[in-house]
Image (spheres, helix red, strand yellow):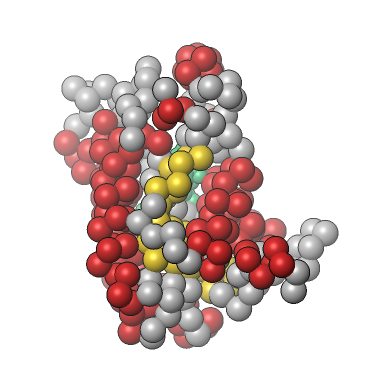
Length: 259
Ligand code: NDP
């Protein structure tokens, strides 16, 4: 194994990626597989395409992956999926807690039910998955790494679109991450968050062109990021190279939040 591989290898690790059927989750799942991890994806509608991409390899050795149907807001369905992972893969070392949704709406139009729905998926969903995975890691003495998907929206207020529920959910994730990092440090479980800026995925690419035009002057690099530009950050947080990085929020936003 080369020096670089020894720093960033995920060989013999089992990595759970929530929401890995498309978008950032799909691209990062493929990246984690190429770093050596066996990948398990959970989503509500399946992730056959991601599994196929990993198993195909394409210029790299084929990886191992499978997908399970689960809803991150449903504790029982998450517990069932995690039990299946232990049965099939024998461990759970890495969690990329990525599943999430965003609704752009003026707060006076955005009903309380919709606010609850966004908080339920983004914040409570990540809590349910992190808690269930953390329990397994503690019981089995696994020195695991949990990476919670936050967003720059957890630190700044995006304009010109209004998305108060999303921003609140992501701010909650950043502090949930710090809280779990401190609480679980004695067990050797690390918990960090990732805060991307605007990334070109189905969630953001299908937004109206005039909105994207309004974003560009606000992004110091004058472009959206690609999901591929998040792979290295997640591998770093998952691998032993980040062994002393705990409770951090890694911002990957083309310098947006610096302004
Ligand atoms: P996508 O909409 O492309 O993908 C979201 C994924 O989440 C899908 O695979 C979806 O699968 C899954 N998902 C949604 N709800 C649930 C649920 N209840 N249970 C299980 N899985 C669920 O989004 P992105 O790839 O753009 O975003 C991924 C994450 O990155 C989100 O947390 C988002 O907030 C965050 N992010 C995105 C940014 C961007 O610009 N795109 C910027 C910053 C952060 P299914 O529908 O099959 O369940």
